Length: 177
Image 1 (cartoon, rainbow, N blue to C red):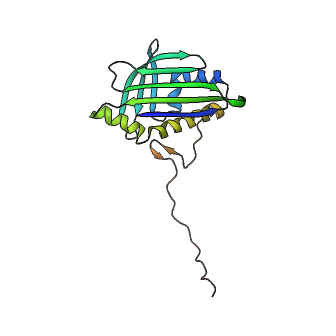
Image 2 (cartoon, helix red, strand yellow):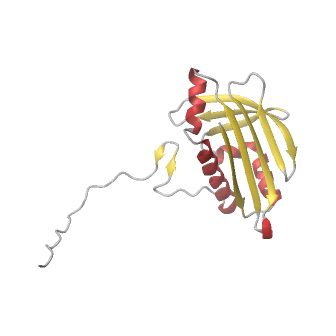
């Protein structure tokens, strides 16, 4: 699975980089991630949950960290989930903020529970998942929160209220002849 998406965030490069670089912030806008915590210097344990509740866990290592420019990581050897990712940060043209470009690769193990879980994490279109995550990232940095309406789709389905019984309806007058 491979996805490459970008978004422009109306914040300075330093602020955008700093927020992403704190990996514990990622579950706040990446729908499938539940937690990330440091285990060693440059190593992190990631926990993800698929829409059906299946769980996948793996360790990643930070392989590149160029402040205000680029962050890259990859899963450690022997991890159940083989993944890598790179995030580039650039000043947007005209001083409009920061362009954030994300490239993710996941190689789901063939078969087994972990393979099925990873496949469910991203569904049929991993690019769409990354695009939605970036949209939430932009909202967090620009407004301080992820904006959710009654009709917002979540990993658990639509957050909207169920339909209500119809009240009294008016009978339409027959058309005049």
